[in-house]
Length: 387
Image (cartoon, rainbow, N blue to C red; front, side, top):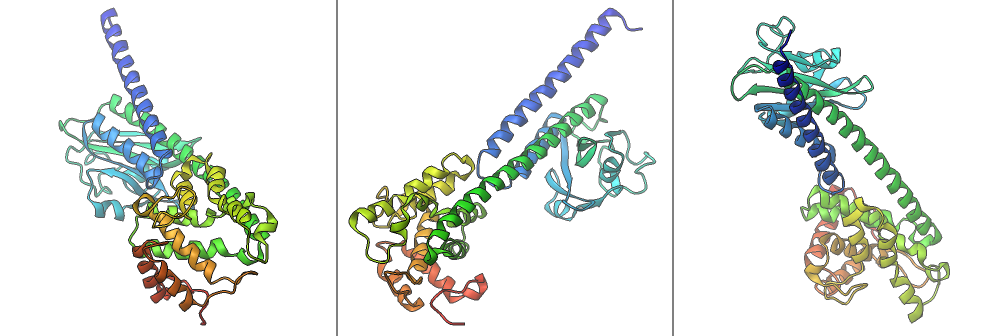
């Protein structure tokens, strides 16, 4: 029997532990929201890294990791880690039942091991290095389905882990499961939105026979330019999405203008020019397309500041939009229209060179010319040339 004083002390300690758990949940949730609403990198792995960092920091440990099952397989790979060498992270592939993480995944239960060398479950089959011989591991699961495992080991004070350490790790495992579920849902919603928006773009292209494949070609050219210029993965993703969506604002332009066989009047041309702003407006509610929206708005700006809708110039225009301007113009010039013949590849290149430094960014033009020179490397074939 515990004394009243001991019971109060234990209750106080339990409240402190629960308070710590709630702090972790709040902190991780806040950072997860920040990451989800940004456009930077692999959102899931970024959030999982936050959790691993939090686990190792608060459990005063040198090493932590999260392994997840790959889709349609029973193999776990490492998605976030701290204190492990890069080659270990890349080479870790565990099946259910293999090593400690595989055991935890198989049995769907958290474990606290005081001495891994003496534990009969792992003494002979564990090849990992545990300097303190003590470790904790918990399954990441939703509705009894194991998604992966979170591990922490090598406590800095060289003492074994305690039950309250395992309780905290289990709370972080539960939070990881919620994060994975929410990120998957977020990605599914993004994909749904993108499919809807791209369907609208297809509807725009279908209204004009002569521009039916325009967005596809522009995207192909623009992505190749972005890669040639060494843009980041994120910037290339912005270019790709913007290429597909850059003309979505034409859904607000009258059919008779889009398909008019002759020269447009000044009033009709002003109507066409509104499509950049209309496109940005259509995409505005989709916060995850923040960078893409700017490119859609800016893709008709000119390097010399004489474009539309905002008369931006040179460095004021996003690099992705400057790329889009070259790709868009090249495809337009090499496409047959009712009011203008298609230029050959050589003629279109001549126009790009002529407008380099005026309508177009010279560096982007040079990059595109290099792309056309090694088109097979990028898997593209410029219109206006023969096989």
